[in-house]
Length: 117
Image (cartoon, rainbow, N blue to C red; front, side):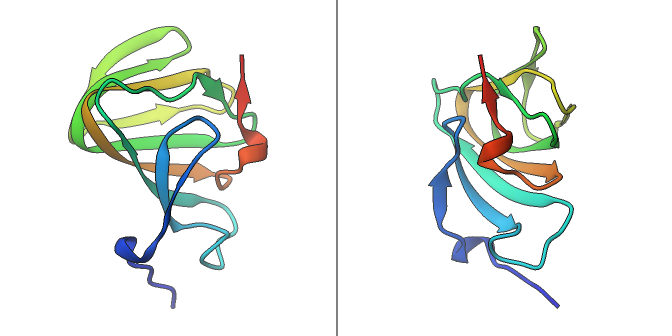
């Protein structure tokens, strides 16, 4: 049985510029097909616009608010919103209030699968 406590996971900066803590992924559990992380983004900051060739992502907003852009469509997002980001979809999230959200990736997040304009 694998149980990881969020508070025990060290934060790091992803290739797109967000700060995340891996909750369950290949680095801290016997994970094969997905990853789960908590991301934070301070007010006024945005991730770099990017896409993943392999990974489909879900974002689930826990706190704060922001603007989510996927393939040119932009929507306001806030607590309780779940966002589907298909593989190969250009995306960027901007914090209008300090954001904290969960990121689920399948297959698991990898720096090598992050592409920029």
